[in-house]
Amino acid sequence: MNNALDSSVLSIIVSAGIVAKVILAVLIICSIACWAIIFYKIAVFKRAEAANRRFLSIIMASHALRDVKTAVITANEGPAWGLSKHVLETLDPYFDWDKGVLLSRDNHPPLSGLERILRSSIQNEMDYYEKAVHFLATVGNTAPFVGLFGTVWGIMNSFRAIGLQESANIAVVAPGIAEALIATAAGLAAAIPAVVAYNFFVNRLRRLEVQLEIFSAELIALIEEAYRKCLTEKGIEAA
Image (tube, rainbow, N blue to C red):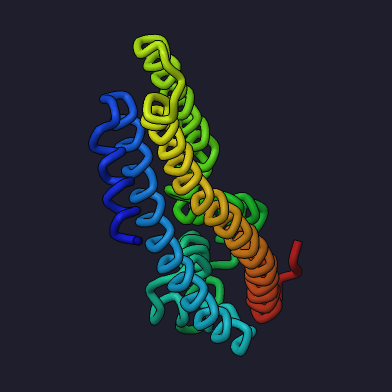
């Protein structure tokens, strides 16, 4: 029975008009692309979260800016690592990381600009992890309408066949209705996974952004603490 059903669906697709075939081809391509993006982004987020956990566990255990620099040198992946690398590279001209001191009492790090640098770094990280996610939303929003267009086209063919045959029996109407229903099913099959996956990834992105913002605040606190400590050791009052 399943084989008969499969062959029936296949025969309907084969016998469908050129417009219906183009619509089905577009929906199938979109569906394949969505599933490829879904599997790829799941792997990307898993790697990012695992790298974040490893990097943040080192940072939380250290409580010192020099240890953050060491972690940045030894690690090589993850959004928190990328954030730290960008910020600490900005501080390289101001700190002697081996000794943990300022290079010069007159050469102070630009603390006022660190928040701007961190916000820019967070946005860059989020832009990277958002890539291709919006394609899922586009497919989820448009695929049902593409399928609906195929449905309307199939119904139009059914009425056209009725007019040509001057008969409304099932043999005349069925091919066009079947063609219409297959287009609807293809549109929903492409749209439903895309919408579910998009909502899932948006929630992951929000959690990642909150995590990076919290880490940024802690990183600024570590930088300010290291700066005050260096000034105290040099006998300079912090501004």
